[in-house]
Image 1: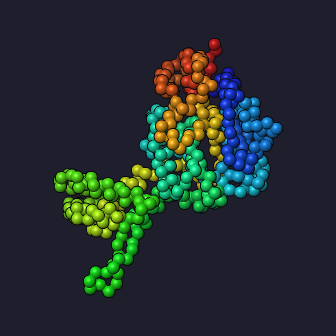
Image 2: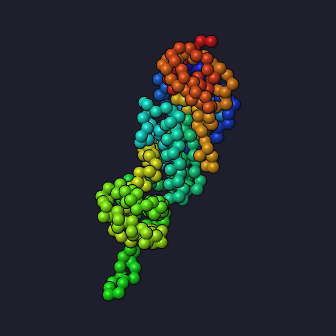
Image 3: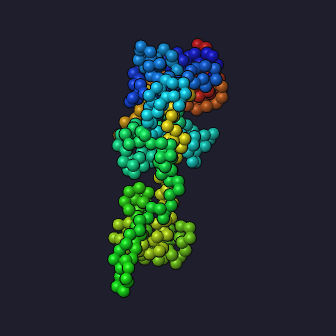
Length: 393
């Protein structure tokens, strides 16, 4: 990025902050703050500041409008002395539990081939799965959901019960969300039942309890059984034999057991036949693959992590780091809802260095090399991502 482009973007970021109110996070005075400037290279990080160091006698808005940073961050951690120069001297009090989803890291996404809009759509799906896990399995109620302004989303958990969790405990949460180290046998509950005639000891029954990965598998099994019994025999047997290690004999046994034990299966009982147990185990593998959320693991386990400030601008896109009400997550469109109003209503000239496509506010701009007049929000996006530079007027 050349000097003219940096100065233009820095100036317009300042204009945005002068007309926008940005609020600090809860306990903002207990957090470390940092920011990246518009220096050449765009990687100079200024950090180890307290909120007071940052704003002095003013407020956060004054700082942002005056400094016009490229990126702004605050720490997940809360400290006695957040402005201390070393982590050891800060005096850790606790940390938010933060989850980061980045489209670049999602399975099946190719950043070199997939369009920006396609990657964000995939990331929205991962976000919805993550929220379901956090709300349904962990029971978290107050979640702060944020579009990162770049390629993904952040979720902040500030429940008092998580603040003092150490890295090891946070690693266990990561493993659960990723479904790592969880096997079908781990989620099956074995319980004693009354013995049948002639037995001197209780029998045992294996079942899938409600809740967690067991509950998810139980729901999938119940749905699968309903689908199976709606098919004719040949179709049902063919469907069962798609599972690994289930041949015609096991498929026939599983189908018959499903017909004869619908009520038991609905309660999570997977011990009605060994073939049904095998089918349930295969369905668990499908559920785990489909319903995990591919979070960026180091972000969640790092108690000192710096994370983007909601309301700030992302210097790599010109889009806003936008907090999203939980009820609006599904309808949120980052390519529309995160476009700053500051950049709407003006046209600017940019020199496109390489062919690129910009999709924002429902419009698609296919740009070849050369000078183009564009709506400012599209030009800012192209410049911030390194595809264009500011052209002379």
